[in-house]
Length: 194
Image (cartoon, rainbow, N blue to C red; front, side, top):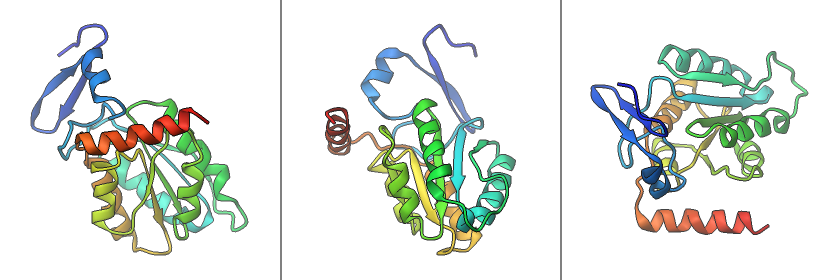
């Protein structure tokens, strides 16, 4: 199916493509074009930006492999090799900025606890980074907050647990509920007024 000019195709495994034109995109506001409002799914070619420091390096390597195998287009913002003295802002800020610059993409930042990485990502205008420590927090970050970046502590969880949080985050779409959108708009207005 080829969309008309200005129409994006949303696809879901096992479901027909859905065209979303400029009017629907405006109505959806900041909701990304990579998911149907309130559903749980992803496009096979969703781009995911990832960055970490030394504390999350092994988890990042694992996630790049896992997510690529599942059909995600993973953009690795580093580091390329383990360095016990590296600094998370060097990698997490570019990953977060790339999410803003690449509409429809999502991001992952990883560190020892995930706290500093979430703080760094949230310094980038347009980023809503959620620190996830459970399946529920990962899902609610997307469902209620329309988070576009997830932060995970590589030293806090097994690779399997962290992978589960991240996959749930990537597969969950923003609910679109008016109360949640209102709150997101208040944050965006504050950010724009700085």
